Length: 413
Image 1 (cartoon, helix red, strand yellow):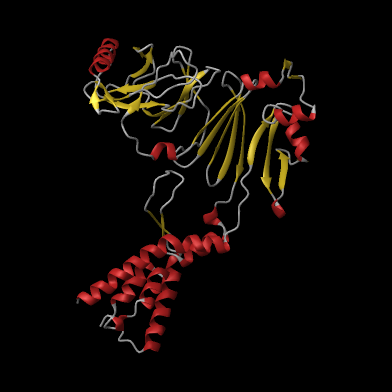
Image 2 (cartoon, helix red, strand yellow):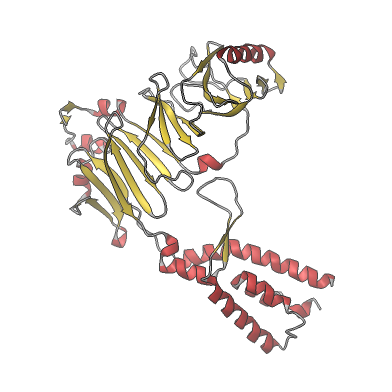
């Protein structure tokens, strides 16, 4: 009996490892690269343009009407995106839509940030550095303390792992005076020294109100913002930028995205129909005239353009065939009843996601059962004595067939 248990334990290990690696080998052998276009908005022709990989791995440059361009003419349509090349070629225009421009002007009036699904699903250690936002030095420096918030805001000296009572007292008192209700629901900031300045953290208290907290000359700065407590905040992405137009963005539980501006913490809703933050990556591009927002998933590429006041100008969408709907993807579902993914675009951590293929895998399972039956008959094995082998194959298909045939029952009898 123990021998049989040992055999099936080994079979289970082989099935699990196969479900992780065999689909990857399959895609490396038979998968083809799908061209995923990158969409821009041209202030020169007031229309969308994009490039994508075509035949022979050559890039095709196209506008929304289907007109094709070579690379230089394509970049000339996008002076805010390719201004370095245009300046090098000596063809950067002096004005666009009546606005005088040069390289310096474009740099000062440009900003970009990216929101990826993995930013929503990675667990965070609830200890945060609070930088000195008005330092006497040019570069930001990591503080000696990290803070956390429970029944009070508590600062811990990292080197000695002891509580800094003075900082804890003055920050807790300041938060309490400002109307903060402990404990915090969540804390979001940009805890890195690789930024031009520090705007601290935005902290949501137990009643849903949002507070802006930072350290100024060693003293607490705390403001209760006018962000609605019932907004349903899921995440706040802080991105300090010298333009100082907005602190960052707010993502709500209803998948709406807002800019959090420097204008008395006013919020501006971005027009992003169909945006799914758990499955789509988003890129925000600000230039001197427009705001261009691209978000993309497995089945579409969408580009939204607004003016500087975030009034919608135009929207463009390109449909993309997902890998699962290609012939190679359909055959994969036929061969493999499920796959185990240890990597995901939603997280940089190791995962163990089981994805089932659906009814298509039934045919593959039937073929695997027939192969097993004929191989066992050829080997003159007792079919009833190892009937559980067929149950394993009925559940795991090709993986189970491979494991059962490799781990022969006679070696364990």
